[in-house]
Image (cartoon, rainbow, N blue to C red; front, side, top):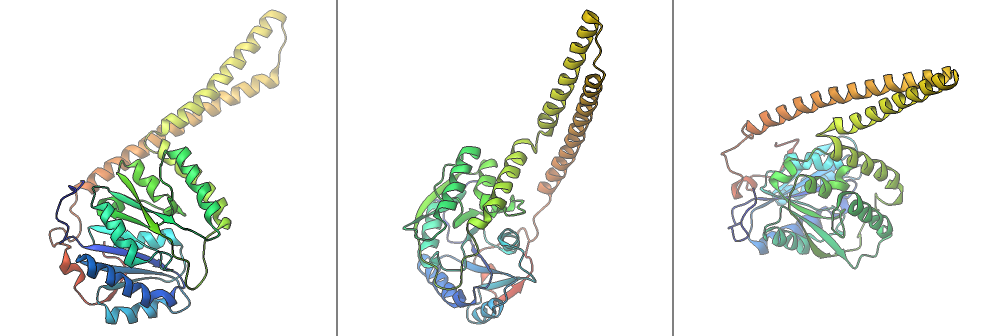
Length: 337
């Protein structure tokens, strides 16, 4: 459901989701700049911090900030589960109709970037991605490789796919992320047909701590992108994959049998090992096709479950998630949704 560009937005709660791992030094400044951004925008908001198993007192710093700013909330994970799981938890805990994802390290300035992201989102886009300007860190080559790969494999035409983002609620509700799929949120949104926009944002050098990302993540990223390409291509039509492989194996076996029969009839020559290979190929192909039928059954059941879930009312539906939702006292949450 896309909102009209000119639709009034004052009553829609904005949730800023911030995963944090050992970022205690930035919490006070981050909260201050977030509050400044929304004071100028005049929009209701909440700040959902996800402490991803920090060991430097990040959770304590967030709790102190929540005593001063009641719109700050904390979701805690007992151990470091990674950015993807932190975002899953944060998206579920967020109550807003619009959701902004920012890093906790202040490489993105909330006072500057939140208005830019929301302004672009108000133009009618479903997802908005930030495009870093003046970037000077050591991860630019890795980012370029990722951007080019996704452009070639998925047709995703953005310049900086792995940076800050803003979403409409229904976009994040449809995410089913695992492994390190936070890098491919735009790919998942594109596959669902959501309209993606991009806005230029200034780059801010990290003020404290150290980066958790870089070239060491490339092998994992490669495996994830291949897996994601396979799933997005065949998850709704598995027989296309298994049927093609199985049919090729059966066809190869039958052709080999035909060749061996011709050789026997023309020269009475037998090739018993090749006959065995042909038989194995045919049987293996039949098994692969059978797996395809089973996969189709699984997909059919999964789609029926999805249809039933869409008919169920959302928890808290009708209670409203406007300005009142963010007016309560600062709290710790496990999940709100």
